[in-house]
Amino acid sequence: MEERLARYLISVVEQGSFTRAAEKLHVSQPALSQQIRHLEERLGVKLLDRSGKTVVATDIGKAYIGHAARALREFDAGKRAVHDVRNLDRGDLRLAFTPTFATYLIGPLTHLFLSTYPNITMTVDVLAQMDIEAGLMHDRFDLGIAPSHPESAEISGTSVGEEHLNCVVSPDHPCADLLSINSEVLSTLKLALFDRSFATRLFIDKHFRANRLQAKISVESNSLEALMSLVSYGVYATILPAFAGNRIAGTRSIPLSPAIATRPICLLKRADGYHSFASIAFEQMFNSTDWALPSTK
Image (cartoon, rainbow, N blue to C red; front, side, top):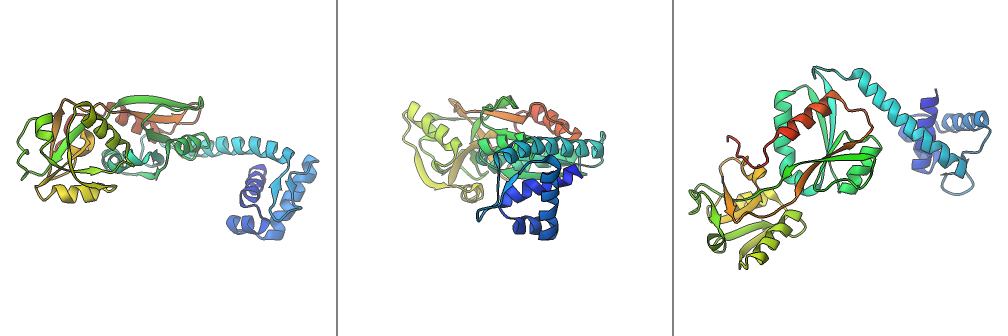
């Protein structure tokens, strides 16, 4: 009963309207309004200000909703714990990635995990790190993958490795059989690179400046698919994190010399939250992944 009323109250405030909240909750508007009034009468306080065009929480209502929201998160975590299965014959896993990591980590990581635990249902969101941390605190995600440690003390972060950038070419490219690509060779290549909205590109540009390379950048794109399409012609090369390049079929992923200094890969989770068996298994897989060594293609 209290759980349902708390959800009703929070929905009314989120929607700013009894009508919209009733539609979202699939209840009638009069019934919803009556339930909230009964809650206010029981508590002896006014939780909502109904005087304006938008329904808002009173100061007392804000305090109550804050406690109610935390209680609901724990209640929902309890329900997941009851339905959680230790042998992972079923379960759910909610992941969030920052945009750059999402481009090349979602595919291989979800494939690796689901190959071992095929009955787990995964949901994946792509968000800025600050939104991932907020989602973890509000129990919308189990784990987040981001490029830096969390700012909030409520979130724990573990650095599991660093990105290593490789030059990726097709098997028909003149450099395909090289064991490494030095600065002299790199400066001669026709490059198709991520645009500057990607943090990876910033590291590449910094490397070019530090080594005084006059790179031949033929194409810039925000699409990995577009870059790989160009690479397939055997004329262009791109630079990608080794974890991605090593796993793209029909390509050669070649280390750079000198290597490009990059950023850490961090796994984020709520410090004091319930951690499902699925999230624990994913974390173990993630921590044991070698982010530089090639995979079998």
